[in-house]
Length: 504
Image (cartoon, rainbow, N blue to C red; front, side, top):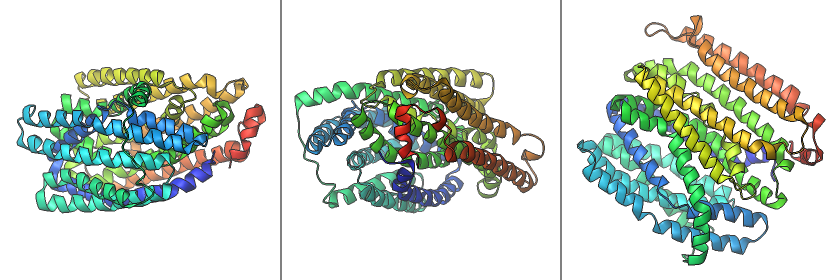
Protein backbone atom coordinates (compact mmCIF):
# COMPACT_ATOMS: atom_id res chain seq x y z
CA UNK A 1 0.00 0.00 0.00
CA UNK A 2 1.27 3.46 -0.83
CA UNK A 3 2.49 5.67 2.02
CA UNK A 4 0.71 8.74 3.35
CA UNK A 5 3.21 10.93 1.52
CA UNK A 6 2.73 8.99 -1.71
CA UNK A 7 -1.04 9.37 -1.37
CA UNK A 8 -0.58 13.09 -0.79
CA UNK A 9 1.56 13.29 -3.92
CA UNK A 10 -1.02 11.35 -5.96
CA UNK A 11 -3.85 13.54 -4.68
CA UNK A 12 -1.89 16.80 -4.73
CA UNK A 13 -2.73 17.59 -8.35
CA UNK A 14 -6.41 17.00 -7.64
CA UNK A 15 -6.16 19.12 -4.51
CA UNK A 16 -4.34 21.93 -6.30
CA UNK A 17 -7.05 21.90 -8.96
CA UNK A 18 -9.73 21.87 -6.29
CA UNK A 19 -8.09 24.73 -4.41
CA UNK A 20 -7.70 26.77 -7.60
CA UNK A 21 -11.19 25.82 -8.74
CA UNK A 22 -12.47 26.54 -5.25
CA UNK A 23 -11.01 30.04 -5.30
CA UNK A 24 -12.58 30.63 -8.70
CA UNK A 25 -15.89 29.17 -7.54
CA UNK A 26 -15.73 31.32 -4.39
CA UNK A 27 -15.58 34.49 -6.46
CA UNK A 28 -18.42 33.26 -8.68
CA UNK A 29 -20.54 32.17 -5.69
CA UNK A 30 -20.13 35.60 -4.14
CA UNK A 31 -21.35 37.21 -7.38
CA UNK A 32 -24.27 34.75 -7.51
CA UNK A 33 -25.17 35.56 -3.90
CA UNK A 34 -24.97 39.31 -4.50
CA UNK A 35 -27.16 39.12 -7.59
CA UNK A 36 -29.75 36.55 -6.45
CA UNK A 37 -30.00 37.41 -2.75
CA UNK A 38 -30.78 35.00 0.11
CA UNK A 39 -34.28 33.94 -1.02
CA UNK A 40 -33.41 33.02 -4.62
CA UNK A 41 -30.27 31.32 -3.39
CA UNK A 42 -32.58 29.33 -1.12
CA UNK A 43 -34.41 28.15 -4.25
CA UNK A 44 -31.06 26.94 -5.63
CA UNK A 45 -30.38 25.15 -2.34
CA UNK A 46 -33.75 23.39 -2.33
CA UNK A 47 -33.33 22.16 -5.90
CA UNK A 48 -29.79 20.96 -5.13
CA UNK A 49 -31.25 19.04 -2.20
CA UNK A 50 -33.66 17.29 -4.59
CA UNK A 51 -30.78 16.37 -6.90
CA UNK A 52 -28.82 14.98 -4.00
CA UNK A 53 -31.71 12.88 -2.72
CA UNK A 54 -32.43 11.65 -6.25
CA UNK A 55 -28.94 10.23 -6.24
CA UNK A 56 -29.87 8.14 -3.21
CA UNK A 57 -32.63 6.30 -5.10
CA UNK A 58 -30.15 3.80 -6.52
CA UNK A 59 -30.05 0.07 -5.86
CA UNK A 60 -26.28 -0.09 -5.26
CA UNK A 61 -25.02 -2.06 -8.28
CA UNK A 62 -22.24 0.45 -8.92
CA UNK A 63 -21.19 0.74 -5.27
CA UNK A 64 -20.92 -3.04 -5.01
CA UNK A 65 -19.11 -3.28 -8.34
CA UNK A 66 -16.59 -0.61 -7.33
CA UNK A 67 -15.80 -2.37 -4.05
CA UNK A 68 -15.50 -5.77 -5.76
CA UNK A 69 -13.28 -4.32 -8.49
CA UNK A 70 -10.80 -2.91 -5.98
CA UNK A 71 -10.70 -6.24 -4.15
CA UNK A 72 -10.10 -8.17 -7.39
CA UNK A 73 -7.49 -5.70 -8.63
CA UNK A 74 -5.65 -6.10 -5.32
CA UNK A 75 -5.44 -9.83 -6.13
CA UNK A 76 -4.22 -9.19 -9.70
CA UNK A 77 -7.46 -10.38 -11.37
CA UNK A 78 -7.83 -7.51 -13.87
CA UNK A 79 -10.07 -9.28 -16.40
CA UNK A 80 -12.58 -10.31 -13.74
CA UNK A 81 -12.55 -6.79 -12.29
CA UNK A 82 -13.35 -5.27 -15.69
CA UNK A 83 -16.16 -7.78 -16.23
CA UNK A 84 -17.73 -6.94 -12.88
CA UNK A 85 -17.53 -3.23 -13.72
CA UNK A 86 -19.35 -3.69 -17.03
CA UNK A 87 -22.18 -5.65 -15.41
CA UNK A 88 -22.50 -3.14 -12.55
CA UNK A 89 -22.64 -0.14 -14.90
CA UNK A 90 -25.26 -1.78 -17.13
CA UNK A 91 -27.56 -2.57 -14.22
CA UNK A 92 -27.03 0.81 -12.53
CA UNK A 93 -27.75 2.77 -15.70
CA UNK A 94 -31.07 1.00 -16.13
CA UNK A 95 -32.24 2.18 -12.72
CA UNK A 96 -31.91 5.90 -13.53
CA UNK A 97 -35.49 6.26 -14.71
CA UNK A 98 -36.84 6.02 -11.13
CA UNK A 99 -35.27 9.20 -9.70
CA UNK A 100 -35.82 11.05 -12.98
CA UNK A 101 -39.54 10.25 -12.85
CA UNK A 102 -39.75 11.33 -9.20
CA UNK A 103 -38.13 14.69 -9.94
CA UNK A 104 -40.40 15.32 -12.93
CA UNK A 105 -43.54 14.53 -10.92
CA UNK A 106 -42.39 16.67 -8.00
CA UNK A 107 -41.87 19.64 -10.29
CA UNK A 108 -45.34 19.30 -11.78
CA UNK A 109 -47.42 18.63 -8.67
CA UNK A 110 -45.57 19.47 -5.46
CA UNK A 111 -44.78 23.17 -5.79
CA UNK A 112 -46.77 26.25 -6.76
CA UNK A 113 -43.79 28.61 -6.95
CA UNK A 114 -42.98 29.01 -10.68
CA UNK A 115 -39.28 29.23 -9.89
CA UNK A 116 -39.39 25.76 -8.37
CA UNK A 117 -41.56 24.28 -11.14
CA UNK A 118 -39.19 25.37 -13.90
CA UNK A 119 -36.14 24.71 -11.76
CA UNK A 120 -37.08 21.07 -11.19
CA UNK A 121 -37.21 20.44 -14.95
CA UNK A 122 -33.70 21.86 -15.31
CA UNK A 123 -32.61 19.82 -12.28
CA UNK A 124 -33.80 16.55 -13.84
CA UNK A 125 -31.67 17.11 -16.96
CA UNK A 126 -28.72 18.07 -14.80
CA UNK A 127 -29.16 14.95 -12.66
CA UNK A 128 -29.06 12.69 -15.72
CA UNK A 129 -25.83 14.17 -17.05
CA UNK A 130 -24.08 14.35 -13.68
CA UNK A 131 -25.02 10.71 -12.99
CA UNK A 132 -23.58 9.50 -16.30
CA UNK A 133 -20.42 11.50 -15.71
CA UNK A 134 -20.20 10.08 -12.19
CA UNK A 135 -20.46 6.51 -13.51
CA UNK A 136 -17.55 7.07 -15.89
CA UNK A 137 -15.53 8.80 -13.19
CA UNK A 138 -16.03 5.93 -10.75
CA UNK A 139 -14.55 3.46 -13.22
CA UNK A 140 -11.45 5.61 -13.61
CA UNK A 141 -11.01 5.70 -9.82
CA UNK A 142 -11.29 1.91 -9.66
CA UNK A 143 -8.45 1.58 -12.20
CA UNK A 144 -6.44 4.32 -10.43
CA UNK A 145 -6.14 6.47 -13.58
CA UNK A 146 -5.30 9.53 -11.54
CA UNK A 147 -3.80 11.57 -14.40
CA UNK A 148 -6.94 11.11 -16.49
CA UNK A 149 -9.16 11.93 -13.50
CA UNK A 150 -7.10 15.06 -12.84
CA UNK A 151 -7.55 16.32 -16.40
CA UNK A 152 -11.30 15.68 -16.33
CA UNK A 153 -11.55 17.34 -12.93
CA UNK A 154 -9.66 20.37 -14.24
CA UNK A 155 -12.17 20.67 -17.08
CA UNK A 156 -15.07 20.66 -14.62
CA UNK A 157 -13.43 23.06 -12.20
CA UNK A 158 -12.78 25.58 -14.96
CA UNK A 159 -15.99 25.17 -16.93
CA UNK A 160 -18.58 25.16 -14.16
CA UNK A 161 -17.72 28.58 -12.64
CA UNK A 162 -17.46 30.07 -16.12
CA UNK A 163 -20.80 28.58 -17.17
CA UNK A 164 -22.40 29.63 -13.87
CA UNK A 165 -21.27 33.21 -14.39
CA UNK A 166 -22.43 33.22 -18.01
CA UNK A 167 -25.76 31.69 -17.03
CA UNK A 168 -26.23 34.13 -14.15
CA UNK A 169 -25.97 37.21 -16.34
CA UNK A 170 -27.78 35.68 -19.32
CA UNK A 171 -30.66 33.77 -17.70
CA UNK A 172 -30.49 34.58 -13.99
CA UNK A 173 -31.61 31.84 -11.61
CA UNK A 174 -32.19 29.25 -14.36
CA UNK A 175 -28.75 29.83 -15.84
CA UNK A 176 -27.19 29.07 -12.47
CA UNK A 177 -29.23 25.85 -12.23
CA UNK A 178 -28.30 24.73 -15.76
CA UNK A 179 -24.53 25.28 -15.42
CA UNK A 180 -23.75 21.92 -13.69
CA UNK A 181 -25.59 20.02 -16.46
CA UNK A 182 -23.53 21.60 -19.22
CA UNK A 183 -20.30 21.18 -17.25
CA UNK A 184 -21.00 17.48 -16.57
CA UNK A 185 -21.82 17.00 -20.25
CA UNK A 186 -18.41 18.40 -21.16
CA UNK A 187 -16.71 16.08 -18.64
CA UNK A 188 -18.62 13.07 -19.95
CA UNK A 189 -17.68 13.95 -23.52
CA UNK A 190 -14.03 14.24 -22.51
CA UNK A 191 -14.01 10.76 -20.99
CA UNK A 192 -15.69 9.28 -24.05
CA UNK A 193 -12.94 10.73 -26.25
CA UNK A 194 -10.19 8.99 -24.23
CA UNK A 195 -9.24 5.52 -25.39
CA UNK A 196 -8.31 4.28 -21.90
CA UNK A 197 -11.66 5.37 -20.48
CA UNK A 198 -13.77 3.74 -23.20
CA UNK A 199 -13.39 0.20 -21.91
CA UNK A 200 -17.05 -0.10 -20.89
CA UNK A 201 -18.97 -2.78 -22.78
CA UNK A 202 -22.68 -3.07 -21.83
CA UNK A 203 -23.37 -6.51 -20.46
CA UNK A 204 -26.38 -7.95 -18.67
CA UNK A 205 -25.80 -10.93 -16.41
CA UNK A 206 -28.83 -11.71 -14.23
CA UNK A 207 -26.98 -13.98 -11.81
CA UNK A 208 -24.07 -11.59 -11.24
CA UNK A 209 -26.46 -8.64 -11.03
CA UNK A 210 -28.39 -10.38 -8.25
CA UNK A 211 -25.13 -11.01 -6.40
CA UNK A 212 -24.12 -7.36 -6.76
CA UNK A 213 -27.58 -6.29 -5.64
CA UNK A 214 -27.28 -8.34 -2.45
CA UNK A 215 -23.95 -6.66 -1.74
CA UNK A 216 -24.95 -3.24 -3.02
CA UNK A 217 -28.29 -2.75 -1.29
CA UNK A 218 -26.76 -2.49 2.21
CA UNK A 219 -24.02 -0.23 0.79
CA UNK A 220 -26.66 1.88 -0.97
CA UNK A 221 -28.66 2.01 2.25
CA UNK A 222 -25.51 3.08 4.06
CA UNK A 223 -24.94 5.77 1.39
CA UNK A 224 -28.55 6.91 1.65
CA UNK A 225 -28.31 7.19 5.42
CA UNK A 226 -24.82 8.72 5.28
CA UNK A 227 -25.80 11.50 2.87
CA UNK A 228 -29.25 11.78 4.37
CA UNK A 229 -27.50 12.33 7.69
CA UNK A 230 -25.00 14.83 6.27
CA UNK A 231 -27.72 16.81 4.50
CA UNK A 232 -30.44 16.48 7.13
CA UNK A 233 -29.55 19.92 8.45
CA UNK A 234 -30.34 21.39 5.03
CA UNK A 235 -33.59 19.42 4.87
CA UNK A 236 -34.57 20.68 8.33
CA UNK A 237 -33.88 24.27 7.29
CA UNK A 238 -36.01 23.75 4.15
CA UNK A 239 -38.83 22.19 6.18
CA UNK A 240 -38.92 24.30 9.35
CA UNK A 241 -37.37 27.66 8.40
CA UNK A 242 -37.66 30.11 5.51
CA UNK A 243 -36.19 30.22 2.02
CA UNK A 244 -34.04 33.10 3.23
CA UNK A 245 -32.60 30.91 6.00
CA UNK A 246 -31.97 28.20 3.41
CA UNK A 247 -30.16 30.82 1.34
CA UNK A 248 -27.83 31.63 4.25
CA UNK A 249 -27.22 27.92 4.74
CA UNK A 250 -26.58 27.26 1.04
CA UNK A 251 -24.14 30.16 0.87
CA UNK A 252 -22.10 28.78 3.77
CA UNK A 253 -22.14 25.16 2.61
CA UNK A 254 -20.73 25.97 -0.83
CA UNK A 255 -17.48 26.95 0.88
CA UNK A 256 -17.52 24.24 3.54
CA UNK A 257 -18.07 21.60 0.85
CA UNK A 258 -15.01 22.87 -1.02
CA UNK A 259 -12.94 22.50 2.14
CA UNK A 260 -14.20 18.97 2.72
CA UNK A 261 -13.43 18.13 -0.94
CA UNK A 262 -9.70 18.61 -0.33
CA UNK A 263 -9.80 15.93 2.38
CA UNK A 264 -12.00 13.76 0.18
CA UNK A 265 -9.55 14.00 -2.74
CA UNK A 266 -6.79 12.61 -0.57
CA UNK A 267 -9.00 9.91 0.94
CA UNK A 268 -10.29 8.87 -2.49
CA UNK A 269 -6.72 8.30 -3.64
CA UNK A 270 -5.74 6.64 -0.36
CA UNK A 271 -8.88 4.47 -0.41
CA UNK A 272 -7.99 2.73 -3.65
CA UNK A 273 -4.67 1.48 -2.31
CA UNK A 274 -6.12 0.86 1.16
CA UNK A 275 -8.95 -1.40 -0.07
CA UNK A 276 -6.60 -3.26 -2.39
CA UNK A 277 -4.11 -3.78 0.45
CA UNK A 278 -6.85 -4.94 2.81
CA UNK A 279 -7.83 -7.47 0.16
CA UNK A 280 -4.21 -8.68 0.04
CA UNK A 281 -3.45 -8.95 3.78
CA UNK A 282 -6.99 -9.86 4.87
CA UNK A 283 -6.94 -7.91 8.16
CA UNK A 284 -6.85 -4.36 9.54
CA UNK A 285 -4.22 -4.63 12.28
CA UNK A 286 -1.10 -4.55 10.03
CA UNK A 287 -2.27 -1.15 8.75
CA UNK A 288 -3.36 0.18 12.15
CA UNK A 289 -0.48 2.57 12.81
CA UNK A 290 -0.91 4.25 9.47
CA UNK A 291 -4.67 4.63 9.92
CA UNK A 292 -4.22 6.17 13.37
CA UNK A 293 -1.66 8.68 12.16
CA UNK A 294 -3.79 9.70 9.22
CA UNK A 295 -6.86 10.18 11.42
CA UNK A 296 -4.97 12.58 13.71
CA UNK A 297 -3.48 14.45 10.78
CA UNK A 298 -6.94 15.04 9.30
CA UNK A 299 -8.20 16.34 12.67
CA UNK A 300 -5.24 18.72 12.91
CA UNK A 301 -5.60 20.15 9.41
CA UNK A 302 -9.39 20.50 9.42
CA UNK A 303 -9.34 22.03 12.92
CA UNK A 304 -6.88 24.70 11.80
CA UNK A 305 -8.92 25.33 8.65
CA UNK A 306 -12.13 25.76 10.68
CA UNK A 307 -10.46 28.31 12.97
CA UNK A 308 -9.10 30.33 10.05
CA UNK A 309 -12.49 30.20 8.31
CA UNK A 310 -14.21 31.55 11.42
CA UNK A 311 -11.58 34.29 11.57
CA UNK A 312 -12.26 35.53 8.05
CA UNK A 313 -16.00 34.91 7.77
CA UNK A 314 -17.50 38.03 9.36
CA UNK A 315 -15.20 40.64 7.78
CA UNK A 316 -15.45 39.12 4.30
CA UNK A 317 -19.24 38.82 4.35
CA UNK A 318 -19.53 42.38 5.66
CA UNK A 319 -17.36 43.64 2.82
CA UNK A 320 -18.58 41.48 -0.07
CA UNK A 321 -22.13 40.23 0.59
CA UNK A 322 -23.67 42.33 3.39
CA UNK A 323 -27.15 40.92 2.65
CA UNK A 324 -25.96 37.71 4.32
CA UNK A 325 -24.75 39.32 7.57
CA UNK A 326 -27.80 38.13 9.59
CA UNK A 327 -26.68 34.55 8.98
CA UNK A 328 -23.11 35.01 10.29
CA UNK A 329 -23.66 33.55 13.82
CA UNK A 330 -25.02 30.34 12.30
CA UNK A 331 -22.34 30.28 9.59
CA UNK A 332 -19.59 30.39 12.23
CA UNK A 333 -21.08 27.25 13.79
CA UNK A 334 -21.45 25.57 10.40
CA UNK A 335 -17.70 25.85 9.71
CA UNK A 336 -17.21 23.30 12.51
CA UNK A 337 -18.53 20.77 10.00
CA UNK A 338 -15.13 20.97 8.28
CA UNK A 339 -14.00 18.86 11.24
CA UNK A 340 -17.14 17.00 12.18
CA UNK A 341 -18.04 15.61 8.74
CA UNK A 342 -14.49 14.53 7.85
CA UNK A 343 -13.64 12.97 11.24
CA UNK A 344 -15.31 9.56 10.60
CA UNK A 345 -14.58 9.20 6.86
CA UNK A 346 -11.53 6.94 7.21
CA UNK A 347 -13.29 4.66 9.71
CA UNK A 348 -16.28 4.28 7.38
CA UNK A 349 -13.98 3.31 4.49
CA UNK A 350 -12.47 0.46 6.51
CA UNK A 351 -15.79 -0.69 7.97
CA UNK A 352 -17.46 -1.18 4.57
CA UNK A 353 -14.44 -2.86 2.99
CA UNK A 354 -14.71 -6.47 1.83
CA UNK A 355 -12.49 -7.58 4.73
CA UNK A 356 -14.81 -6.26 7.47
CA UNK A 357 -18.07 -6.13 5.48
CA UNK A 358 -19.70 -4.02 8.19
CA UNK A 359 -21.93 -1.90 5.93
CA UNK A 360 -25.01 -3.00 7.87
CA UNK A 361 -23.58 -1.71 11.15
CA UNK A 362 -22.29 1.43 9.43
CA UNK A 363 -25.81 2.06 8.14
CA UNK A 364 -27.17 1.64 11.68
CA UNK A 365 -24.67 4.26 12.89
CA UNK A 366 -25.88 6.65 10.19
CA UNK A 367 -29.50 6.00 11.09
CA UNK A 368 -28.74 6.71 14.75
CA UNK A 369 -26.89 9.91 13.87
CA UNK A 370 -29.76 11.00 11.63
CA UNK A 371 -32.23 10.43 14.47
CA UNK A 372 -30.07 12.43 16.89
CA UNK A 373 -29.73 15.27 14.37
CA UNK A 374 -33.46 15.52 13.71
CA UNK A 375 -34.35 15.31 17.40
CA UNK A 376 -31.80 17.95 18.42
CA UNK A 377 -32.65 20.17 15.45
CA UNK A 378 -36.36 20.07 16.24
CA UNK A 379 -35.70 20.79 19.92
CA UNK A 380 -33.43 23.73 19.13
CA UNK A 381 -35.87 25.20 16.59
CA UNK A 382 -38.76 24.89 19.05
CA UNK A 383 -36.58 26.64 21.64
CA UNK A 384 -36.15 29.57 19.25
CA UNK A 385 -32.54 29.00 18.18
CA UNK A 386 -33.42 28.73 14.47
CA UNK A 387 -30.56 28.26 12.03
CA UNK A 388 -27.90 28.32 14.76
CA UNK A 389 -29.69 25.50 16.58
CA UNK A 390 -29.74 23.34 13.46
CA UNK A 391 -26.04 24.06 12.91
CA UNK A 392 -25.24 22.84 16.45
CA UNK A 393 -27.41 19.75 16.05
CA UNK A 394 -25.46 18.85 12.92
CA UNK A 395 -22.05 19.22 14.58
CA UNK A 396 -23.06 17.26 17.69
CA UNK A 397 -24.67 14.40 15.79
CA UNK A 398 -21.77 14.07 13.32
CA UNK A 399 -19.29 13.73 16.18
CA UNK A 400 -21.57 11.20 17.89
CA UNK A 401 -21.54 9.09 14.73
CA UNK A 402 -17.74 9.40 14.48
CA UNK A 403 -17.37 8.10 18.04
CA UNK A 404 -19.66 5.16 17.25
CA UNK A 405 -17.74 4.35 14.04
CA UNK A 406 -14.40 4.19 15.85
CA UNK A 407 -15.96 2.16 18.66
CA UNK A 408 -17.09 -0.37 16.03
CA UNK A 409 -13.67 -0.39 14.37
CA UNK A 410 -11.75 -0.52 17.68
CA UNK A 411 -11.51 -4.34 18.10
CA UNK A 412 -9.92 -4.73 14.65
CA UNK A 413 -7.79 -1.56 14.81
CA UNK A 414 -6.21 -2.48 18.15
CA UNK A 415 -6.38 -6.30 18.02
CA UNK A 416 -3.59 -7.58 20.28
CA UNK A 417 -2.19 -4.09 20.89
CA UNK A 418 -1.06 -2.87 24.32
CA UNK A 419 -3.67 -0.78 26.11
CA UNK A 420 -1.40 2.28 26.05
CA UNK A 421 -1.52 2.39 22.25
CA UNK A 422 -5.27 2.92 22.04
CA UNK A 423 -5.20 5.30 25.02
CA UNK A 424 -2.62 7.52 23.34
CA UNK A 425 -4.55 7.59 20.09
CA UNK A 426 -7.82 8.57 21.75
CA UNK A 427 -6.10 11.14 23.99
CA UNK A 428 -4.64 12.88 20.95
CA UNK A 429 -7.97 12.75 19.08
CA UNK A 430 -9.96 14.12 22.03
CA UNK A 431 -7.34 16.81 22.65
CA UNK A 432 -7.52 18.05 19.07
CA UNK A 433 -11.32 18.10 19.16
CA UNK A 434 -11.21 20.04 22.42
CA UNK A 435 -9.06 22.69 20.71
CA UNK A 436 -11.61 22.98 17.87
CA UNK A 437 -14.55 23.76 20.13
CA UNK A 438 -12.61 25.76 22.74
CA UNK A 439 -11.33 28.11 20.04
CA UNK A 440 -14.82 28.49 18.58
CA UNK A 441 -16.22 29.72 21.90
CA UNK A 442 -13.16 31.83 22.71
CA UNK A 443 -13.51 33.69 19.41
CA UNK A 444 -16.93 34.90 20.52
CA UNK A 445 -15.60 36.31 23.79
CA UNK A 446 -14.13 39.69 24.70
CA UNK A 447 -11.59 41.19 22.28
CA UNK A 448 -12.00 38.28 19.86
CA UNK A 449 -15.74 38.82 19.23
CA UNK A 450 -16.83 40.69 16.13
CA UNK A 451 -19.39 43.47 16.73
CA UNK A 452 -22.58 43.67 14.71
CA UNK A 453 -21.51 47.11 13.56
CA UNK A 454 -18.20 48.94 13.59
CA UNK A 455 -14.63 47.86 12.98
CA UNK A 456 -14.25 44.16 12.28
CA UNK A 457 -10.62 43.89 11.26
CA UNK A 458 -9.11 44.35 14.74
CA UNK A 459 -10.97 41.40 16.35
CA UNK A 460 -10.30 39.42 13.17
CA UNK A 461 -6.58 40.10 13.61
CA UNK A 462 -6.79 38.92 17.25
CA UNK A 463 -8.58 35.77 16.04
CA UNK A 464 -5.91 35.13 13.41
CA UNK A 465 -3.05 35.44 15.91
CA UNK A 466 -4.87 33.14 18.35
CA UNK A 467 -5.58 30.52 15.66
CA UNK A 468 -2.01 30.47 14.36
CA UNK A 469 -0.58 30.26 17.88
CA UNK A 470 -2.85 27.44 19.04
CA UNK A 471 -2.74 25.28 15.94
CA UNK A 472 0.93 25.98 15.28
CA UNK A 473 1.71 24.71 18.79
CA UNK A 474 -0.50 21.66 18.28
CA UNK A 475 1.24 20.85 14.99
CA UNK A 476 4.69 21.22 16.57
CA UNK A 477 3.75 18.93 19.47
CA UNK A 478 2.23 16.37 17.14
CA UNK A 479 5.34 16.38 14.98
CA UNK A 480 7.74 16.17 17.93
CA UNK A 481 6.04 13.54 20.04
CA UNK A 482 4.25 11.51 17.39
CA UNK A 483 5.32 11.92 13.79
CA UNK A 484 9.06 12.40 14.26
CA UNK A 485 9.65 10.00 17.16
CA UNK A 486 6.80 7.60 16.40
CA UNK A 487 4.17 7.82 19.12
CA UNK A 488 3.11 4.19 18.60
CA UNK A 489 6.45 2.59 17.84
CA UNK A 490 7.52 2.07 21.45
CA UNK A 491 4.59 -0.22 22.16
CA UNK A 492 3.98 -1.54 18.67
CA UNK A 493 3.12 -5.17 18.17
CA UNK A 494 4.84 -7.25 15.51
CA UNK A 495 2.40 -6.31 12.73
CA UNK A 496 2.84 -2.62 13.60
CA UNK A 497 6.61 -2.88 13.31
CA UNK A 498 6.19 -4.43 9.90
CA UNK A 499 4.04 -1.42 9.05
CA UNK A 500 6.78 1.02 10.07
CA UNK A 501 7.99 0.95 6.44
CA UNK A 502 4.90 2.98 5.60
CA UNK A 503 5.47 5.69 8.21
CA UNK A 504 7.01 8.11 5.76
